[in-house]
Image 1 (cartoon, helix red, strand yellow):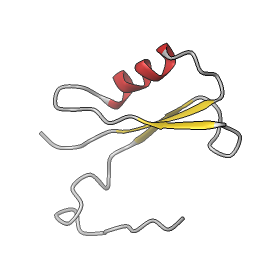
Image 2 (image 1 turned 135 degrees about the horizontal axis):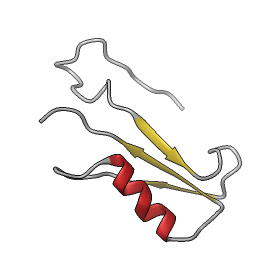
Image 3 (image 1 turned 30 degrees about the vertical axis):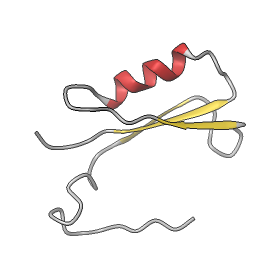
Image 4 (image 1 turned 60 degrees about the horizontal axis):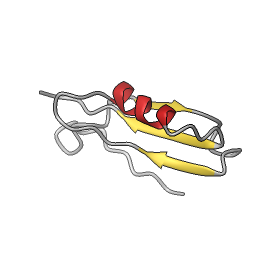
Length: 68
């Protein structure tokens, strides 16, 4: 997997945002879920949805958006 990064915040305003994770590590999980939030919500809230699914073998990832 290749990831591109930008040092110019105007090119990628979310580059400094945190990536929250829950569940097993990506290398041991059988499933993966990526949760995206909208305005007014947070990555932490999205991870709550992942927990409600009750899938212990699923890794959950939720990027936290930055900005207004």
